[in-house]
Amino acid sequence: MESLMDHLVALLSKPVQDPLTPEIIGIQSRGMEHYVCRKLAAGHGICAHMQFVFPDHLIDTMLAKIASTETSPADPYDDDDLLWAIASVLQAPDSSFSHTPLGSWLEQQHTTTALSVFQLAQQLAQTFRQYLLYRSEMILRWDQGEVGPDEPAWQALLWRHVTASLGVHHSARRCFRFLSAFQRGKLPPEAFAALPERILLFGMITLPPVYLEVLKALSHHTQVHLYHQLPSSHYLGEAKEHADRPLLDKLGKVPRDFQHQIIEHDIDQGLGEDLFEEPTPVHDLARIQADLFRLQGTSTFSGDPGDTSIQIHSCPTPFREVEALKDNLRKCLEDDETLQPGDILVMVNDVPLYEPSIEAVFCREKDKDKLPFHIMDKKRFSGNPVALALLTLLRTLPGRLKASEVLALLSLAPLAQRFEFSPSDLSNGSAKQAFAGAKTQPIVKSTTCPTAHKTAGALVSTACYSV
Image 1: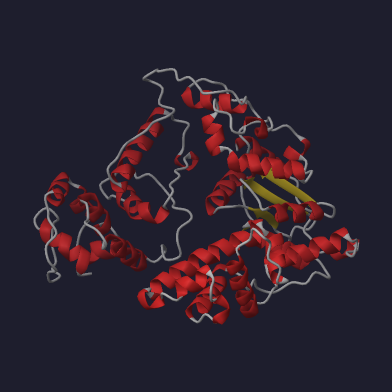
Image 2: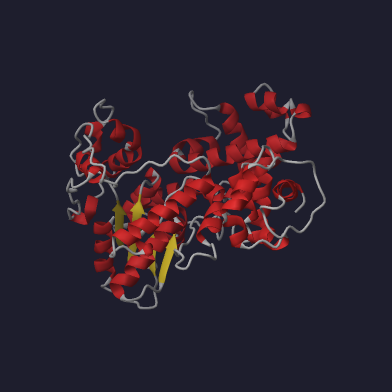
């Protein structure tokens, strides 16, 4: 990643001809946007006039700039519109769904809750979004009423009901019309005059094949720079399904498929430059990286107890995980004076699950030197503390609460303010011991509790039911 970032910093040191035109950089997460901004600011002294967009928005924006290309001011197939269009069909299905798997399921609606119908609509909306990106040819056939022998006919039928409501001007059709016009030479050079001087995509893990085709077509009329990571400079297809390379076989499918797509579309890798750097096996993590780079077999660990490059911590709860994380981050910063908090990236698989614990552990008032942090990729309501507290509370209702979960819940600002808790009340050892021995009681009247360790049992019931 550092090599790619250095190349990007050098490239952007050469400004475009129009100083009022922003640089357009495609990213796949807001965390990557934060990383790129920091590195560009460090390299140039400032990071400004940058427009970070996700790949789908980038493609739509570029197609909208091309004259004679049919465009729409807003995508009628965004997540919400597609979800509610499907939900409306499921709530009032017509006779065409009879004798289909979906029709059989819908006939059981007298025993099916509205929530189940909505959840099914969510899953179908996600499936159709993937179809638009990765099976665009199938979607175009469905638009014409054609269904392949191995394709689910009931999904095609549902899709046609959706297009009757939203129209057929979806992303797959927009890309198809552009590529068809480009390949037939129907777009003169002046049609591309509004394109920016260069298009950048950084840190790409994968892209839909149709997006690669569009980017390749655009590269005939403007600069297109695609920065992507691979674990090895060798062709990853050589390591496919090799028993002696289990890590690469299990975790390398996405980069292997993306590398194959790039080769298949004849896209020059690395912008004509070799940006690969073979890791030096100075510790266990680097040893694994070096073996993956060379496509070698299973790595051998050193067994050195002082080698902490790979650590595994087994913790009972997310709250305890975050506490262990904070302790280890402090140790890393103390041991390495060159390491800065901004150089650290913490990855989690469920941000909403860990967000309350992160806020509680990293914002303790007793810490003299707090670790600065920023949570990326938050959900829609995470910026609203009351909504976050409510959603967190609702997630706890189906089961019993552990002591650490109660502490994390009560550490949220709205609940802490309601019960007049300070961070010190919830972080001392007596509070944890009190909650560890507490048992959930029936619903009780909400009361103000000055300290956690005095009324632990009441707090459990009050926090869970009387907000």
